[in-house]
Length: 516
Image (tube, rainbow, N blue to C red):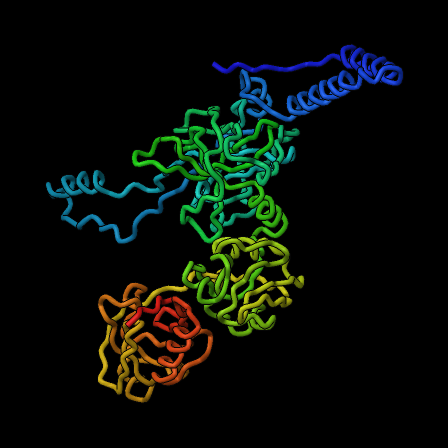
């Protein structure tokens, strides 16, 4: 049970308070002893005003969700999809027997019983919601993926055939269109950025095919990354979401859609109080593009990025591990044309702070294509601002984390042990290129051995990896690597930044300098 207390101060009471203050002020002119009373009256008036303001802004738990859901339910739909399974090829034919043979009837019955069924249909159920009275409906891509027929079922059980206007697998969104013959009830997309952890929310959908079902809860967390795609930024809620709720809306207390229910975390398939919704702030741009173009048009920068760890931040002179570290720049990309370099840490993009690596792909993707944006990077111990013209992302292009190379090899080249890092290195000569299958374009110093308990082993550096840069300076010989270590020691640094090239590409690694 919740107790809701509403404080009301009537206009008449406020007028009486004001009149009392006026009388006191008049008396103060003749009697200075009334000054204290004046102060107390003013304090009482201000306190009352503050209480009124807080009462207007604060929202307690509602007595009931009935009025809200009665208004919203007509705009939420059930979605039924049908996929037709095609007949398998290669069905054997009935053997030929002499007329009247006793085997003919036997084999005919056998083949009829075991012949693959033709045009078998499979169905699935999901949810959606209407955003336009003319019949525009939003749902999840996985709800309608592979469907041959899509049927939208309204709250009054009216069945309407739907066609796909556009869909986006990366954010799991799809836009459908029906021809209703009349105006449909619709809901609007709200501002998910304004939602706070702990705010009340309502989910409506079609769990387990039961039809319009309402559940309520709170926002449990924001900005969740569940590794479902490159643009994960989910709202987490404890409002019950089950199979069949996919594609349904998550409402705030104003009746605005602030999320599209998409996934649950559950070992059993049922709700355990951990559900995930696509924020409306993410969905708005995608839905607009799908309606306009039938596909998404995302911004593209053309960089391969990785996380800035504490050690990397310390080695670069950053106060905090923030931003996205550029591990490589695609040839001919907007980043290359905009003078973004390998080793830069992108701190802000188009005025938006890149607090962590995972945010950059989303920020870039949401940027309008063809405009010039300012990018602030950390380079050589200071901030540098450059301008980049945003390109259009191809499905094969992405800003992805740099990977690791787990392949081990051995070498007998001329070697130099770098004890503080726990590696042994040699020049990239003809023999090393052949032994480690290195491309002719690869330059640097090749790792030929890694001490099992050294700092390099802790970071996954393997024999065959090539050290391209040390402290953002190119190296071509083992002696240059050693000199960089000595320089870092003399300057009091506890770690050093290496640019490593492996079979999976370029990546930065910050290694602790072990005291010998």
